[in-house]
Length: 287
Image 1 (tube, helix red, strand yellow):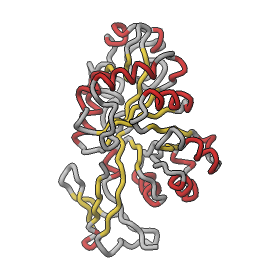
Image 2 (cartoon, rainbow, N blue to C red):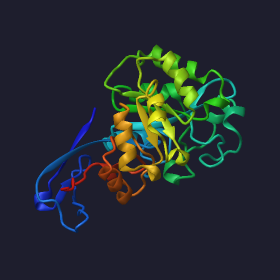
Image 3 (cartoon, rainbow, N blue to C red):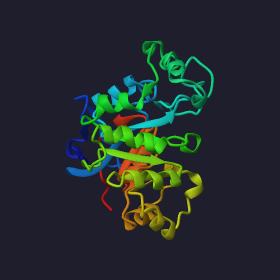
Image 4 (cartoon, rainbow, N blue to C red):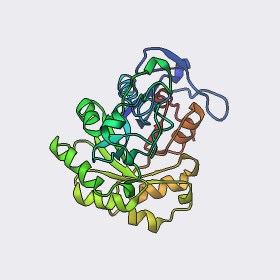
């Protein structure tokens, strides 16, 4: 499901694929615009939805990402006290709702009563914490879904519950990598891969993995299809090593055009971003 980004550099403009507007094509290092029409393939992952434009992990953010033609929405899965799979990033509700408390210590009914939109803007007052099933039902077949198991060590059995929801909807079979599961908890990914062997999985890597070795990547590749690191640690050598190990690399989280362009130039396979509009075009440099 890779998108082809075409940059009309001959006239110094690039067409945005979602808005129909034009924007100035970025210059290369030498300050000149590339002079011929070129293409580069990249996967555009809307981080927690189009979270630069709408409250993260809400239906509004996911719908916005779909409208902006992202390739994937990235969602964060946790579990309520009574066993419901819910979509929220933090282990507490304090930052992104009008409530306080720990996600795993609250019932789904308690979580559902919270306002998950007003913190971002009053325009989004009334947005609710979603269930995993609601997101799957709303967007399966429409856009790719990158599922992050957030702190799975806090929720025994979460891998099985996620698998059940996917199998129930027949989403556990290969379908152009439209469903991918990832986590910072690599043991959780090994377990999930055993449960869902046909689905691609990814390991997320924080800054401490800056010096990941070829041997470590080879070990990850025994159960993972993606190595998705913090964007600040990505180098050409890392990208080459990940590709050599047979995996793809989707760094996180780009929040500026400059950051996105740097990742383009490192030849990554995809970019996880709060601003999907930054990932639609890129003039490939002449090396």
